[in-house]
Image (tube, rainbow, N blue to C red; front, side, top):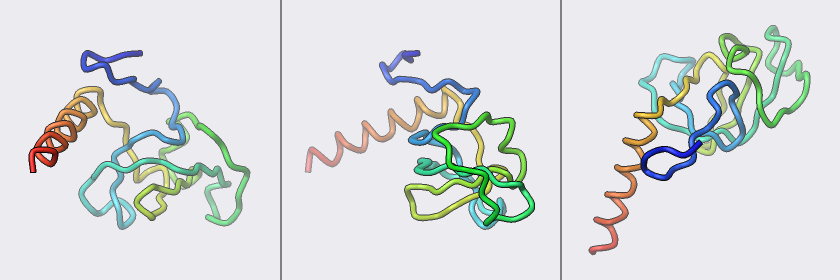
Length: 108
């Protein structure tokens, strides 16, 4: 699906590798900030190291507790409950801000 700015929007039912999400560090106590998912693993939910396999995508419904563990491009890892989807409006705003910053940087 293409947005008004020409960006490709993700299918919002699944969390996918390469997707930008909002991540709240320190087990959800820090303010949310954008992060990109680089790895997805599913566990039993009882033990972080009880891996049930690696996945390219998982249903967002599974991200409400500790069953989903992701690695992020910022070097951190997180449980699924620490993540939230980025709305189309937030995604557009971030894309416009990044484009504007690129324009400012190129003027230097």
